[in-house]
Length: 89
View 1 (cartoon, rainbow, N blue to C red):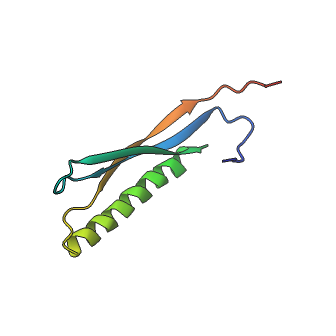
View 2: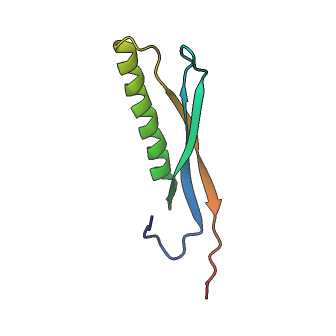
View 3: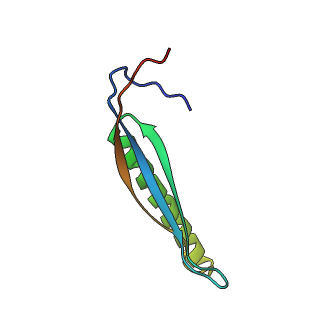
């Protein structure tokens, strides 16, 4: 996915999101991990993590309200990468 970024960008950020579904009948606990980004500043990465946590909370509330048992939980963190750009011929 193409992104516009300032030419002098020397670091990038991503949100690492870990979504865990509790054990249910015939299934153990399931965990999925993925990353969102890259972002040129920390704030959008933090916002992506906050959004994922909010979505999981709404899904968990729906599942409990409908008697489907506990829904998923989300944890995660923001990572930073230093970038060195070099010209490719």
